[in-house]
Image 1 (cartoon, rainbow, N blue to C red):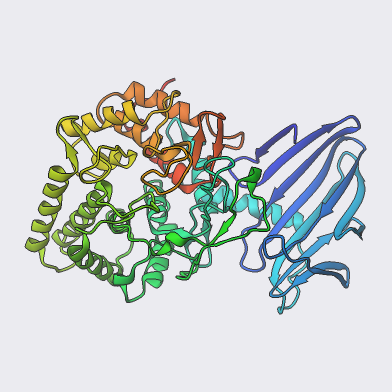
Image 2: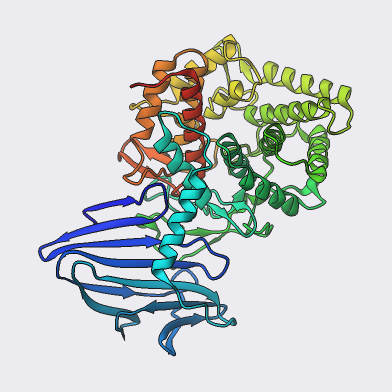
Length: 535
């Protein structure tokens, strides 16, 4: 492990330093923003002494199953397998041994030796020769200029900026698609089966990511995502999927890679995601909320976006009373999840506001009645009067952390006794010993509501939601303490995974996770607005 590592300023340029008996070496890794072949550039720099170094590069395709044909092309090394090629460029002398490309060299103070790998479709011409030093300067300039657009200047700026950079890094620039995480099958339960592929664009995750970007001054990403959404949904919102590929692909069939042991022997390793065709009614609310926020923050009008919003409500009008798999994508039976119904209400409410602004025409009075009907249905069927709390689904006694979004979405005001009762019930029943929040109860080796065996850690987004709610009901000191405790869970680079395992005291799940960094930003904004911060 490196003795020290950090990002260089507000960028994604990673610097790692190693102290050895013979001296100190710095390694700088970065990916230049680009229009052509994706590149990963590494610059090895001598700091003190004379340090012998070895580089080992093992290139494999198809998730480790295919060994490529590695050969020289003029002065370059290229690995080819089927449709893929990786080009390896360095000034260091290389040699092949045991299906690995090695380089042995020594660095002294001031020496800088670069290594670059570039991916390119194998049928295309070789990518241009890399220019590592110029690319490093251009990459730093890119991040410096991008960060300068941030409108947040509060006390948590460092954490907010790092989260925004992470969200930007999860954006696929050519299409505007935003992935939930760049990894697959990092386990939520070490050694268990809760291993999923997050390298896709969830409408929910992308919509809330978009909201955070808009709230901090980033309209261009919002515009690009809206265009992605319109292409992905196309002319058929009745067949809306909850997730798509980064270019809008619909077929995301799930498969298990049985030749891989999994991270810390957590099998199976999955590619694709079978949840793509689930019914998750809350997605309509998140997408509509994002479109509404874009409209409210001055994003240029798009007539088809407004038309899509109306079509989504017409679909909800027919289907909101159906059970669904809900925000957590349960693999058990469908239920009438309270959060799903609340977000259906949000979709109708925001569309009514759009019509009242005069931007679109629709059956205003009919949809006002629909909004009231959904609200009444949730309050009658999703609320446990005896315990003074909303429940996970109609008729259930289980709680669910997604209920914390009820006041944040404006479904009920924060001072409503049912909201306060729900917050306090979740604190009692879904808190870990260190004060973080679980999504819902799991039942160990027995299959619980999500249809899966095993347990999971505290879902970090839910803990941020709790901090938000505590601030909204006036418990601002408690909210700040929880928020700053959550900030302390970030790794040394300021990054968060999906969950925190209170038993193992470590992050678990796919990493870094948009669904953790988005609520970090939102809670920082809320606490700053309320003045609820120390120092």
